[in-house]
Image (cartoon, rainbow, N blue to C red; front, top):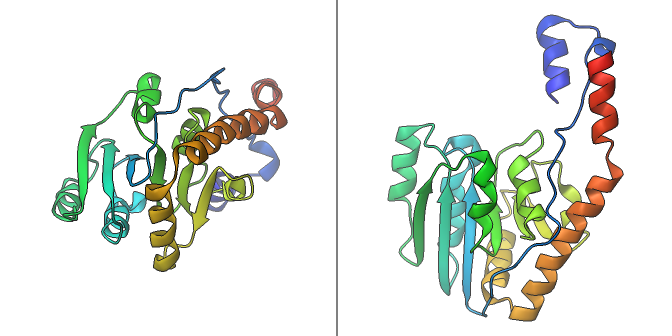
Length: 212
């Protein structure tokens, strides 16, 4: 996507632009928190800006029942929007505003959380999705990311933002999920991400970019 934007902006020769993934640091194992039916901790990790759709996440949670907590990590890029989100917190959930985390501590955002809740309006890649899966956390995503296959592998959901009924059903399913079911989903998430990485050519692509 970004390659196309560069070509459109400066008229570059497509062959002159090289693409390479970041080389990730994978976790050999992950420890999932206990999950009891009727209780859940979602986590939102991103900039607090309209594109990331935190206010949409809060509206979705308003339709759910149970002991629900949402942990929010990220810098407040848009102070007005952040204030709007604080006012939009529904009375049926607890919200914990954690502020920004440096990248090297990003895994801490998932220590006590069960699911990443990320109904973004659009992602070119979505590094936080990668990090969540690497930590063994299933993901709840809009259909505006490249991670469309997570639902096929049982490690998350991709749902159009317009389908509010399905969002509510999925969120409630997460609230009601039993201990063993969550443990399996967490284990599958970690395994899925590691298998996905094995299919990529991180080092080869970086070397091709550097040597031209």
